[in-house]
Structures are given as structure tokens and as C-alpha cells.
Image (tube, rainbow, N blue to C red; front, side, top):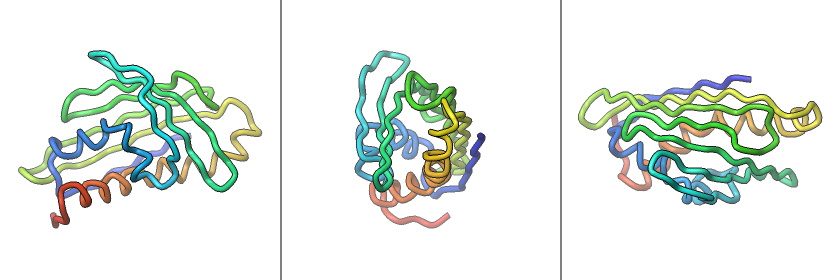
Length: 146
């Protein structure tokens, strides 16, 4: 399954990139994320585990995240209930205080039972991420208009 989202936001790439890279704080502002933990960090990658909770359903997955400062963050599955999971956040500068945020995620669950139980939730989670990061930017940097 593929999910693609984009938005024009009244924040520059230098403001949005740190929010995307601040994985340890995801549980504070992503409503579906009950835990976000950095497992390891190196010069070129961060390995992190996210736990998604919705009602009684709870699933964790681990990704390796490689960032290109103020441009992109590439995600790939390390472990979790997926056969495959890849994603990319891209930031395109538009003006001094504006950018386009693009999120592309492609995933396939490891088995049909997990896909039936968790597929709709994960699709909603990914679809809501760009909006959640825009709300976070408003909290951190203040309300702005394009």
C-alpha cells in the first residue's frame, strides 16, 4: 500500500526538519504514538522504535532513519509487523518562511491477519502525519499564515 501526502506550510525547511528528526518527542504530539524511543544513533542514521496504539490494538516497529539536513529523511524497516516499510519526508523551500512538505510511505504487512486488524489504523496514522507535524510547528514556532 502507498500513501502520499503533501502540504504547503508557513514554516521554512530549517524549522520543519528538526521537528521530523525529533523522534523522541513523537509521543508528545502524534495522537496515535504511545512511545517513541531512539535505540541507536550514528553520524548517518538513527534507529528508532515507535509504538502505535489505538484502543486495545498496540504494535511497535523499528526503522532506520537517514537524514539529509533540511532536505529529506529516508526511513526503512528494521523490524516490526511488516513485510516491507519504506518512506521519505521531503522538504522543498518555497520562500523565506514557507516550504512544501511531502511524505511518501509504502508498506506491506507481514500477514493477512495483521493487515486486516492493523491496516486501516496504519493507513490513517500515515495519512495524518503531515497535519500532525504542522500542528507541532504551530505550537513550537507560533501561528502563521502563508
